[in-house]
Length: 112
Length: 110
Image (cartoon, rainbow over all chains, first blue to last red; front, side, top):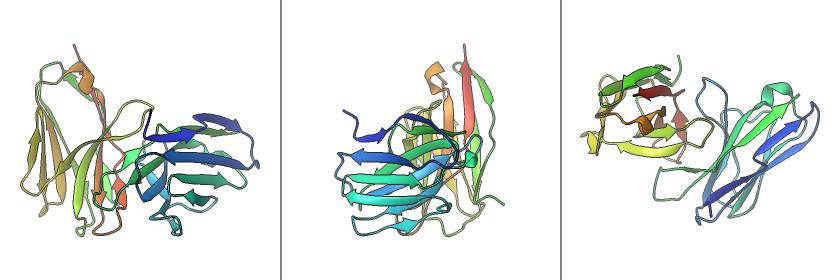
């Protein structure tokens, strides 16, 4: 089984809809991250969390919110989706002792 | 100026050849450096960390030049399976936050 899982893997939605992307991990890592990737651009950090009670904005947090329900779960919400939020979204985890981040398989989101 | 800049490529490489490419960065306070590999529509995976003394892992060699603020990746004896996008990644001094370059695409052809 994969250590970092994301659901759904693909989602098509309409402008104005609320969408939640979920991430779960079995690696026992404290730190979790949400990124988006657009064609030709690097991954950009949306939000990150260093433990259950810690939430931090990243480079591009506007239009997004997150919830860290447990050490193993970190969800990303788009309260009112817009077309320029169409992208590939990745969740990642890391532990305290290393900079290495481990990524989930990604969620491809299309907002029409 | 982007924090991390990479030539997007593609670098078309004959199988068995050597290919090298660089990544330049603007934040002189960056403390850790990595190359990640990303296959089409898949998640990035760590290829190797880059140390000040340079490091080698099989056919892959990474170098760091702090004075000129660039890191490099060299792939020897290229395999078809090396075809991927290679992401240059920098880490902050604290906090595990990473900054990603846009990636360099490598296509190894028979």
